[in-house]
Image 1 (cartoon, helix red, strand yellow):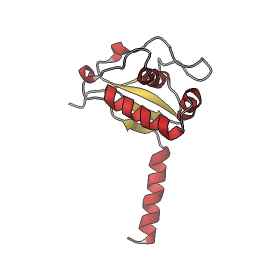
Image 2 (cartoon, rainbow, N blue to C red):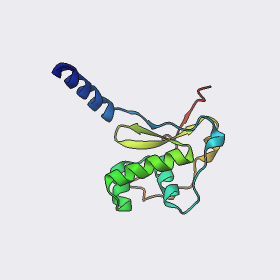
Image 3 (spheres, rainbow, N blue to C red):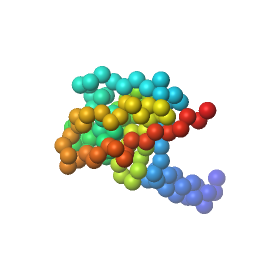
Image 4 (cartoon, rainbow, N blue to C red):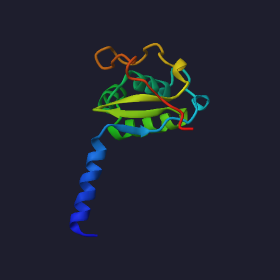
Length: 129
């Protein structure tokens, strides 16, 4: 591999790292969504995604390191069947088509200064089939 090719691939990787994209794909069908029980940490993380949050906000609220926040978000999202979309600096909840009845849920995370309204933040993706 030439130095030029390696440099080009590194620059492409850096662009995709900061671009808006789906980080975790949601389940294929809304029947596969299994939201965690109320009062659990997993429920808190899903609700935070539903309202739109940044890793730094969750880091401050939970006391975890940034890497621990990200790892737990990924685990909870995959286990629950929901997805995560990064837009600019914040992460948002992505639901499969047909699961719009799940949200909006009552706001149970953070105070109004760190969490935005979730009405425009939850995305429902069409079924790929």
